[in-house]
Every structure is written in C-alpha cells, then in structure tokens.
Length: 438
Image 1 (tube, helix red, strand yellow):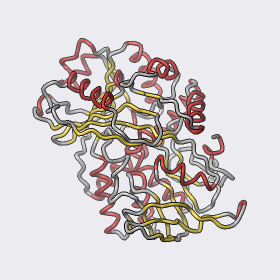
Image 2 (cartoon, helix red, strand yellow):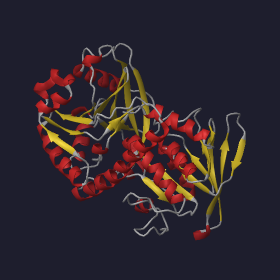
Image 3 (cartoon, one colour):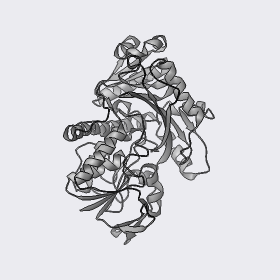
Image 4 (cartoon, one colour):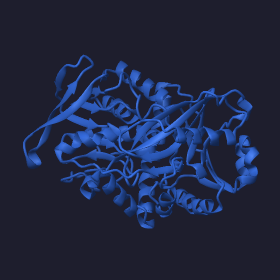
C-alpha cells in the first residue's frame, strides 16, 4: 500500500521505518526542515519503563491545588477559556482514582517495555549512535511520604515485569556518587537497571536518514492543512491530504492509508472529521549544560522526584528536563521556570557544569489525561492514530511505530495493549476507543 505518515518526530519517524520494512510505499509529511525538531528535539532523553506512573494518580489533585499560582511549580495549570482544557482537566481527575491509575500503569508498562526491546533491536540493526547509556535509571526521593508512595508503585512495576528495585539512601549514593553532597537529604530511591538514556534527536534524525536510504520519501517544510474524505457512515474514508510546501504551493497527496503522528497538533487536524481526541499540550522545559568536570557529573540517568526533573548525561553535555505547564499551544520561555531548573541542578552538582550560559528549550508534550496514547484505528478504515504519548514519546516511540505498522498491515501487534479501534480479537470498532470515551 501507499501510506502517508503525518509528522516526523520520534513516533512518526519510527512509524515510517517499520511501515517501510513491512513493504509499504511511505511518504512522511513534516512542517519542520528535518526530523525530530519539535517535541522530540531536546527532551529528557530517558528510555524509562520504570517511569510509568502517570501524572494522574491519587496524590495528584492535592498537589495541583498546592501548586496553583506558583510559577516554578512542577505542574502549572493555567486556567483558560477553552472547553478542551476544562474537559481534559475533568477527565484527568477521573483518572486519579486508584483503580484507574493501576489500569493505566499496566497499559503504559506494556507498550514501554515492548518499545525498549524494539529500540534495542533497531540499534543493533542500524548502528545509530546517539550518546546512549545503558546504565539504568536511578530515581531518588527527598520526601518520606513520596518515597513511601513509591514503594507501592515499585511493587506494582515488579509484578508487571519491570525490575524497579526500591533501595535506601546509601545505595542511591553508591550507584551515583555525584549525589554524595546531598546524602543527608535523600530518604531513599529506586533503581531500574534495564532502563536507558540517549539523545532522542540524534536517534530520530539518524533513523530518518536510514529510512530515506531505504526509500521513504520525506517531505520536509511541508504543512498539512486538512484531510479530505468521501462517503458517509461506515463507507467514509480518507482520500487525500492537502498540504502546503516550502514554496507556498498547495498540493493534494493521495494514498491508501494515513497515519497521524503529529503530537498535540493531531487535535485540530482531526476535529473537522468528527474525531475529538482528548489531548492537551503540556509545555515541558529542558536545559542543557556543558560538562566541565566529568568526575563531578552524574554517570547514571536520574529522576529527581521532589522537583519532577530528569537528568541525563549526553556525552559532554548534561540535559535536565521536566516541569509541565498547561497553557495552550504557546512555546514562550518562562524565565522563572528556566531559572528553577538551573538552580536545582546547581544545588545537586555545583562543580559539574558551566551554568553561565544554559541552552533552554520548550516542547509541547501531547498529554492524554491517563498518559495512555492513542495507537490504532479510527472510524475511518484507512485513517490511523499514533499520538498522545505525553512525557514518554521517546520511551514508547519505537514500539508504537512497530505496532502501528503491524495494524496498518492487517497484523495483530505482539504487545498486549488496548489498541485504539481494536477489540480483544482485533475487530474494528465503530469509533476510536479513547475518542469514544472523550
């Protein structure tokens, strides 16, 4: 079949790679001049199966209330006169129940573990270098209540096959000696040796080059304006994608199947088709610092639970990312939030980096209330979704791409995941599972 993939972040690029390997003729449409230049460009760089607990959990509502109005809060909810934001917020609260949280964790772990294994296979096949480290991820806590809560989460992870081990403060510092300066503040941690880290931009850009060499047609500097349809009811289908190229020329691209992998921007594209995705953009921040003292910098990828920051060493750079701001589609840098990241990083590793001229960045994470992405079919038989991966796009990217290639090809994916538009027996549903719940 001829397949058009809309979006060339890590998810769209991986989708194109696996669709090509499945024998399809693939075209990728991307508004940026290259692959992985938006949400995938400068994130926290963790392949974190162990970080599967969603933002929506039983402790979240009180935290959100406590953080309201605080410019440097880990999660900042700015109320806007937008029905989608309010609808998203109400569903978020529903997902905070213990039962819903446990069900969502199971889904996230399933696709994340499958994706990690898929990434390892792609790495072995392609030889792409992306500052990868396979030293695990260490999550440390400075609040006893949060650590007590984490013990239950870690137990559930182990039951699901993720080897997330709870450890004491001494073991935290043994695994990562760079944390010795704050040993008196650490109350415990957990360590997942099978997790990884690496520069998602380098990997996705490298995979795009490999895919292009294999015959995938990347149309960069090209924006999709709408999807055209014909027919009605169960006979309705997508006939083409209207796009504008870098010279301002309108074109109509036709294909047999279409995969939407545009992150937060999937929502406005699909709404005219009657597909109301419950995705809201969460503006995440990152800062990148040059490492000046390698011995003082962390060698293991870290998660600072108290400040909701992830820390990854990328060769001679230190990437620190986190926080989330729900405030529409704007990507303006908030200096208070940027300075909070640098302040905390300097507290943890005062001698490790040059903090004088950090490179700050923001990206719009496509958040579903549950943190479970949309992967699969829609009510249009030739329109597919691969979007809504939230903070775990890098973690889930390769597995999501492989799974959507299977679905487009008429195969049931190997992973046990509640794919959108598919029943337990692989039958099409009338509407996308999660969209129907919206």
